[in-house]
Amino acid sequence: MTGRFIAVEGADGTGKSTQARLLAERLGAVLTREPGGTPLGEMIRSMVLDPDGERPVDRAEALLIAAARAQHVAEVVRPALDSGRDVVTDRFIESSVAYQGHGRGLGAAEVAEVSAFATDGLVADLVVVIDVDDDAARDRLGGVLDRIEQAGDGFRGRVIEAYREMAGSDPDRLVVVDGNGSVEEVADRVAAVVVDRLAGT
Ligand code: TYD
Image (cartoon, rainbow, N blue to C red; front, side, top):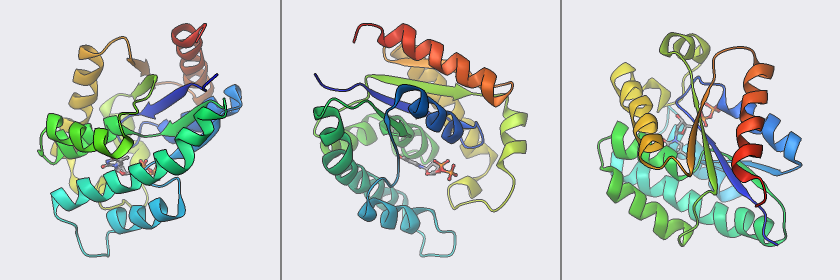
């Protein structure tokens, strides 16, 4: 039996990385992240997110992230699923559609196609989108911002809107979870949604 593949998604500052970790702990799942998840992927992550490095042009950014994704799926995600383990990933294809497709304006369909090539067609069984009030997200951002986090409020707005739109058009696979409240409250909501949606799979 293959494992279940869950992506935790959301704009920067939504607390999604914490929620991905807690969900993986609850399910006893493999926890991984993008861009990254493999040594090559983590190198690509630094290339893409380091604010001091050469700035990749938008298409290069999309392709670098897709290359990291190809490696991640082939080396980590598919082997784990094939061995029957559940996998929780902190970001996956929907991040590319939101950030590169809508945020950078490269086009949702084009970016989705690049990702489909990278993953050889693998998509998450369930995508949990953490959604918080914009002010809360901006407050949580703080600290040193990576290159994409520095893109500004207009970009952020397009990303947030893109997630809502994707969830609206694919409600069987994407579910929005209210990320306002304490870490424990949100974790309980996420767990409830996952149990509900993936019961019997
Ligand atoms: P993030 O996952 O938020 O990590 P941290 O919690 O350490 O900040 O940061 C990853 C950044 O990469 C985030 O700004 C979104 C961006 N990103 C894309 O633009 N496209 C993608 O496909 C992925 C996976 C991430």
